[in-house]
Image (cartoon, rainbow, N blue to C red; front, side, top):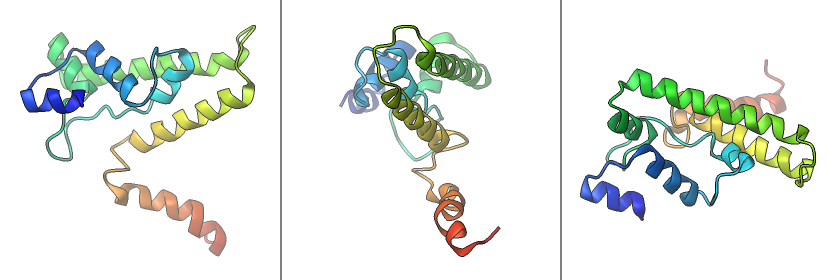
Length: 144
């Protein structure tokens, strides 16, 4: 609903407002390291499927006055730092979370990162088709 209000009013949120709303939208209140891992794959592209609320790149550009290239670089660095935190979690001394849970969260983050890297594979199924075929069809048929 927040994104709909932003879009309908033409409001561009700050980068932190965007992140806080994104955490809430995907059910990750608080933003712990593991939760950030799930968030790693959140869509960070320009508007590319019609009219939508601003995305993280646009919010960062609007707030900082940076170029799209600079904003993308900042978002990439944020993602890299989040991956570093996520990969260190199982090694944390006294971690209260079971290793199986950590692996599940990490795998979910990997999947989201894959689905939203180099475009939106949900919104453009043709981008995903070769991967789905190689995973489900080619191994069965024994194709190279």
